[in-house]
Image (cartoon, rainbow, N blue to C red; front, side):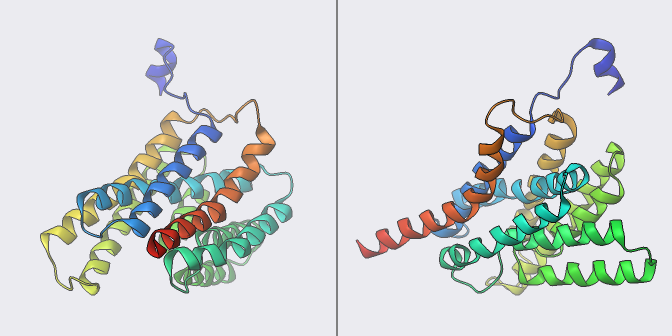
Length: 251
């Protein structure tokens, strides 16, 4: 960082909206893999792992947004609204009864509210634990709230935030190994270990992106469009992918 300032060279070339657009693209690729490709194929694995970039980026911007938003109440209600709007498209797209990623982000928002407003250490820890546990019903369970807490308590300290991303990548990889052991393969295969290790790279790349490449600014044009596009894209793309998949099956 000091070297960048001395030489006049800065790596911070990406604004918030550009990073979010990249995250939307990587999420789309992940969902295309899950809905249209065969699990275990090379292309499936590549697109799935690319998609693991999205959730940690969203956790980072959730913490930033909570810190700087003018109305935390409106912020929370907006997350709750789009979590509700996204649930049916989510269930149609993936065919299971779990809750969607915006629900998980809403739980993370509530965790941030608890960390800020609950004075009792015991009560604060109990509520954070319960809200973290509540994400088991959602997408990116446990990993997303843990990263959110780590980023919140280390906010402003880039070294500790970098360690937060690294630690979260390890947790995610370990959980993925367990998923393979309990899943279809049911044993400790080299494939399971290899895939689990690669799955954590998305979190590492997300950390590098927001900590080293993010310039702390928003796009100068289309602020209102971008603000709501990121919320609307989630249920909209899930519904579109579901309709495409249904159409392909009917032909």
